[in-house]
Length: 213
Image (tube, rainbow, N blue to C red; front, side):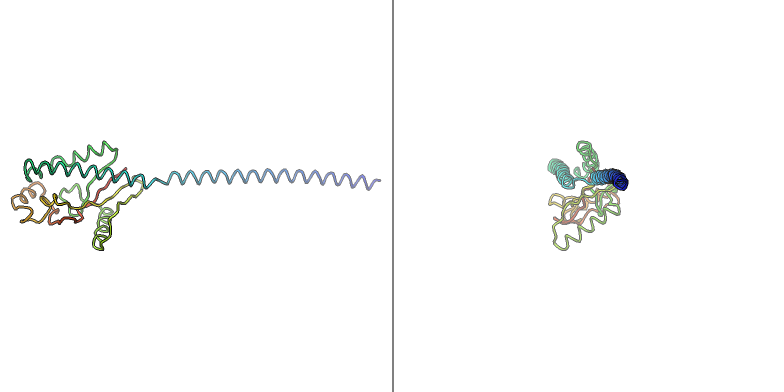
């Protein structure tokens, strides 16, 4: 009888210990689950912060570059037709930057036309932009299609796209002596003493669009 009572007590205490152990195990398991959930939220939030909609910037960049290019080209063509190439050079010298700046403000971005063979020193390519232009040049020589580029860094999101020479551009950027009369070339040199933007042919890579969002 005593042994039975003792066994009962021992069994009861053992049962209590099991309950306590299971309770502790349940608490530990819940804590682990909570920690894993928090880690998951942290990883997702970090990924969301570092990711961006590349396609969105690609489409917006294309639209902005096309709109800016069409406006500048239309203004130059109108000036050439109405007043001649001399006034077109003067127009670009005075109005190209204000027009680009106004469109930058309209779209809420920073729009630039960049080149290695630049006319205005303000359009001179930096090291990274020169690399992009050189890559485009290499692709052109291979006969590959030139595609826009979207990059993200600490400074923002950048859109780059090639600028091709059109037939109308040759009046001021073509071959000196044939497409560009000597008198016009001398006028260009007066406004841009370090001009490098001549001797282009139709379809050549003139430079790139650089749009910072």
